[in-house]
Image (cartoon, helix red, strand yellow):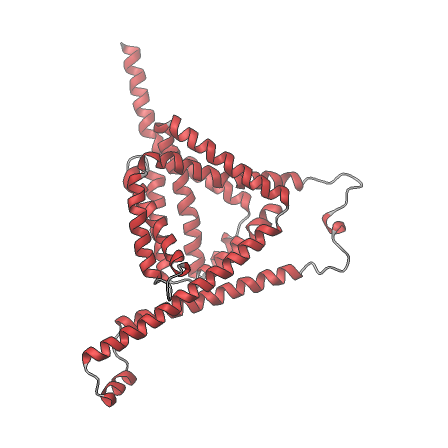
Length: 338
């Protein structure tokens, strides 16, 4: 199935999430909470929640962008997370007026390609006419069809190992900076005659070195991930890539237009759709990060996830539109009595 093949890299990526540092999972957990609030009460708390969402996006972007900076030794991932959160808060406050149109545009820009892929998958999965070559017949004889699968699994295992090393390095840096002296360190201090200030300076230097190592591993993880994403994109047929880009562009344009023309009703709709689009994948991320065996059941097809998002979005819309429907009913009664 084409849709399942397209989301397979995403499944492999989710497997590597559990080995990322705790800070990333903390951002995802906050994103899930923000998504639930947007889903249920987004129309009422839109402005503060838009700022929160921008803060989370900025924090996540800063965490992953920091290792890519050309500065000497790179910037600490935690510094990048803090700066990204501040920049996100400022942008969220400044862009509030346009956030509704932009948010609906982004949601439709993501949903439209998924719908296009599911529709394309259904069209390609129809029975072939007599005389039409099957996919297996079009393959070159002698080509090992499982070779690419082995390569994908090797890449996924490499990403998981990089993520584990990354988390261990960050944990070592935190323990060195905040934890008490070990017995070996105490014996070393007694033997060397260092005072408390000198010990603190040495621990700070060691922690800085470990954080630099962690930052380098984040960069290595991102490099490997970018190569996998690029390879997955290159493997897609040309017409599929055109379909994805075109549908995303049309969805973005339609979403922005609707957001500007119908602001009141769009507020409830977009926050319900955006909230569901946030808390559903965030919940899957956190469930996968736990490493439980039941998390394997969340590896569903693209069509199933699209249906789940649509149902969740519809429920959120109905919950948020109750107030608008009541006001509209009251106005109708007043006009009829007048």
